[in-house]
Length: 123
Image (cartoon, rainbow, N blue to C red; front, top):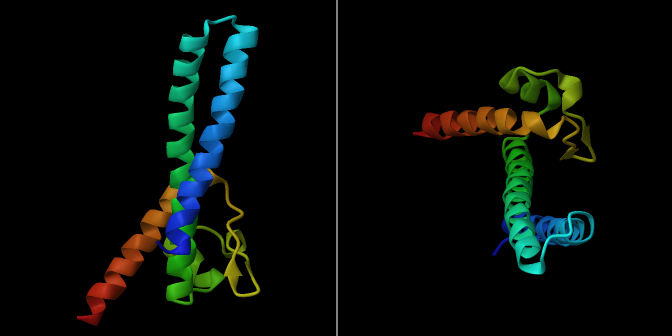
């Protein structure tokens, strides 16, 4: 398994573990739930956090992969996504995602369309 495929999974597992422990303690101590109900609630929250964190990790890796693959500059990224060039700082040849995470799906979608167009243009 490649490094970029492993990062979102590890990120998701760590996030899920932390959220499980936090929610279990909150349910047990604050809400005085019984142990089995607290574990079920904590498990459901942990699953939600795993999914959310996995997607964020995956989106980050994919955005950076596409930008690196096509050697996109901040100006090109801005043109493709419809955002400002200052939203895409590149330091030491690495894209820094400083935008709020709520924009990442839109950016990822635009870059995947760009990649698909480039792949189709080759043939």
